[in-house]
Length: 219
Image 1 (tube, one colour):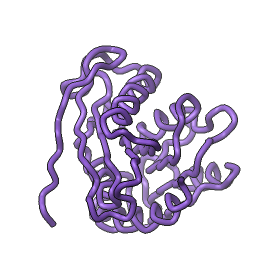
Image 2 (spheres, one colour):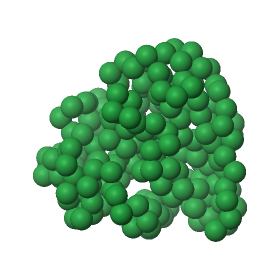
Image 3 (spheres, rainbow, N blue to C red):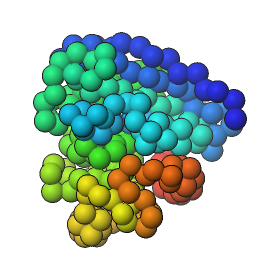
Image 4 (tube, rainbow, N blue to C red):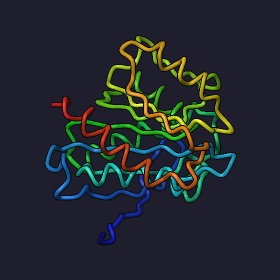
């Protein structure tokens, strides 16, 4: 597979400059030419989470393979992004800024959001504030952040959960997912831990197959 070029840029954010990496989706992807863009949020900044996390880059590759333009970025206080960690509150503003910038850059008609761990909480809160066509939540730490936007999720949701997650209780996540209406699509990976070590190829393949089904209904 040929190398994919990413543009690394600095854009304005609510707490100062935000470091982003963006790439165009594959020209022969299933949804190429649909005018969509995806934004991927990384895990907890105080525990080493950055936009270069392997799960985050795997999610970006999945979207790119489908022909969706994608941006990943560092929250405030991470890498070259200005500001300091704000316990998931100011980070929602960071995501909103990146989402608006991405939609303008790619002339996108629809916005897809994805988060890993801490990033899931930021995505969930943003879903109640900006138009989102689809949300992808990987290993959401249910119980630590607000994972139910006011009025519920306004879009289809996909949840990915490892059965051997050492940081998040899989049973709690499954119960939470079952409580949602409409119920999200759940990708259960019984042998995966929190960081999906040794499972990233399978994660990407299963994500691509699931997203093809879920995204097909988006106009």
